[in-house]
Length: 239
Image (cartoon, rainbow, N blue to C red; front, side):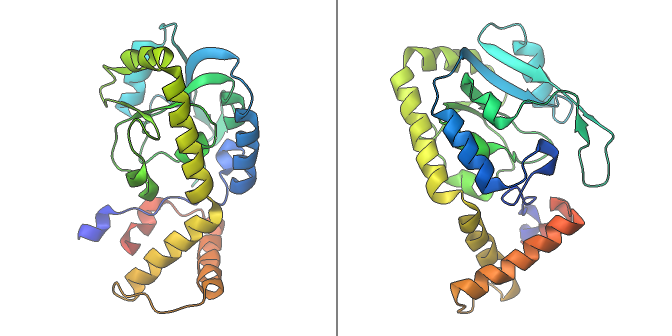
């Protein structure tokens, strides 16, 4: 029963068709290149559907008129099975690097955009949440991100702090980028997931496989997920 609380995320490390990301690794490279440029706007940016979680609606209603924040409320049209549909307003991850700061807040579940945001070379305001993806346990406040309370009462305060300590904020962004480049590649994700699946299959003891065999096994598994558009709830029993 305890294992049912652990989720295997949707395969964003392969692609994210709804957000026009055809290849994870290529998208991260492009985001990184854009993030090397100086930001054009001083504000903190966020875009998303405010109806997927109460915290998003709170964010939008509280800070939409705050000069420190640029918030884009959008929705999805024509929802299909396993697909979000077409966005009413689309701003790519690359375009988001035009802003000095970025923000991440939970939606229906964990946040699929965090790996991409860590490649932006922008200080990230990270709103406390549950559940979290497997790698988020490695991320440390004021080392990889600027923490924000789940009730958002300190968000403006944290923005002001970042402005007044921008060298420190830039170092936080650099730390996040270095972590992403080292740990958040598709190959590393495959290694992690394949190990977890094998641990489950063999009762916690992973048999000795050559890395090529291990990777090949999980690539086939991911292919099935991708083709069938399985949701994370359907896969939760694996963990």
